[in-house]
Length: 628
Image: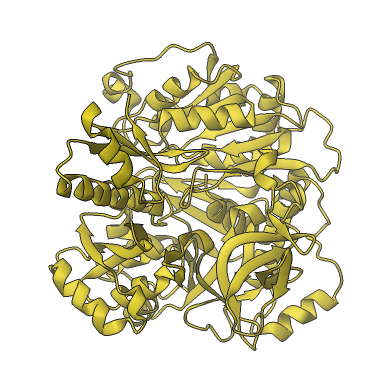
């Protein structure tokens, strides 16, 4: 790890020549084997099932992680997974999840799937990736993963084998005591063969049993979070995965670091900037509980876990930092050198509040699934501009482009446009597994259009200003929802805010905002609306509707799910219009249709009223239909 203070340090690294990980590994196996050779007896990964600072934890050294990952790769190959075949895992965090991720990438194409998804979504992803093998949980108390996966497998006939991970091995008491709780109440039948993961792994040799040619092939497929639409499946090549690790080791981590990562391993933030950086640097990563920040007691005991492991860095997202700020710092955390925040923009007030309360610097960064993650980060040893996601990593090029005619034009310094990225993690022309999704995805040749809006200042710092799809278009006037969200982030009672455009028959959209309050805080929509009027200078951006929810819908890594908020707004506006007109029809549900977008389905059909319903709702741009 070198010193990273400013853009000059990055240019000096680029001047050294093409990027290259130590030993120049060209496969995931070679990458991991090099780390095991250099740091074999050092801790690589630790995991504990429960969140207590003295609870049982298990650790794999680098040598043990290599051995188990090779066994997993051999197992997958024995089950028919070749270099172009997919092995999916639908797992919370555990040591087995790490082993599956690495073993799957060595043997074929590893495809993580969020275990919080519904069975139909899991099945769709299994079919799209053509997964042959699925690694998932055996039935476990208070977890419904096994049951949901069984339902998904009934709709994914291409899966031939299921490997079950038994988390009961982490329990501090005999499995026999909870045997009655481990049986699924409503088992679902499917055609796949079911095997125990650990037992099958232990029967495999610890040396690679197949050739591992140094080909830069697709080795992973990660689905997006779906915050602005249905999840897409992005492909990742070996070079992009190793590049992420190289960036981490070159600029951020050293072998003596201990990184606390309560983020899920089905997300790129945990898999690449964290895990791949650990491999490149030889550092130690800790995954507390299967559900990470969502795990029982994790947020309450996190500072004590930092003290237990002597963590030097914490991996976080804004929602996690907000939750931590509602708890006291109740342990010695002087070992922490920094907290990395990513996944979504960090409100300025939360940034300042966290640094004041902990004395720990926040290092905000930026990445996305389509780029195999890493794009930019604030320099740990230099100036961290509040509101900025930092400087692009070495060998990463970021351009801010604006549409012009049939093409694009480069934006000036500090001019907002679409963020477009070219780096070793971008696969030009073939980012998404579904070819049709790659249409119009690139600009200026090989620059990935991220869909994020941003600007670059005179010193090269990148600022995210919003999502192109999130723009609220009020009568042709573009409104950045960040204006509303930043204003409400400064209100002491507000934990999170999600601003969207609600349907309007005249303006197309009007700004509205949904709010989640800080635990124990009280306020009213009227009070928050007045706060907006006082703090938003752009009159058109002042929300026409403010609503407080018990909790905003979020992804597993804390991004606000704006499609869910749009669904609420569509139903509310349509139902109010129908009621005011004295019509019987009401919105029964709002669903996402692949071709038509968010689609309102109406119940209460009265034949005589249909012309009025068509005339009334036809004034809105949002599609609708009668429910069956």
